[in-house]
Length: 172
Image (tube, rainbow, N blue to C red; front, side, top):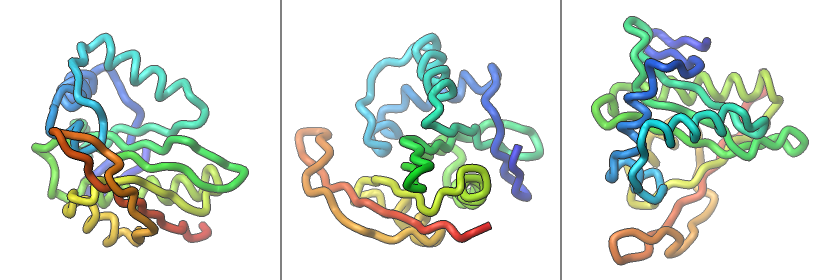
C-alpha cells in the first residue's frame, strides 16, 4: 500500500466492485477516458479487473481515501516496458471525488513506485485535447505535451484531437 496524507493506493478488493462498476457504466466519464461506453454488468467489470491484475504488463491500484479506505478511482500503468523504461498511464477518478487532489497524490505515488520497482524512466499518456482540467493536472505534475493526434477519437458525430504527454521520472 502506498500512502499520501489523504490518499492511498492499494490493491482492489470485493468492496470496490460497486464503484468500479458505476464508473465503467458512466457514459460521460468513459467518453472522457476515450473508452467506448457500453453496458458493463458487475461480471464484466470483474473480468476486466481480473485481466488487468493478471497481465504482467500492467500495474493496477485502487485510489482510496485514507481515513475511510473508500475507493475514489483507479490508476494503472499499461504496456509496461522495462527494457526501454516506459509505460502508459491511465487514471480515473469518480466524478463525485474529482477536484480534491486524489489524482495528483495518486500520480505522485505511482511515479515513485514505477521508478523504484520497475526502473521506469518515463510515463506517457493520451488525453482528449478538450479535457483541459486533466491536462492542467498533468502539467502540474511535470508532464509535457509532445504531440497531437488530429481527429483521433470519434464521439458524438465528430472526430476529436488527442494530446500525447510524457514525463521523465527522476532517479530514486
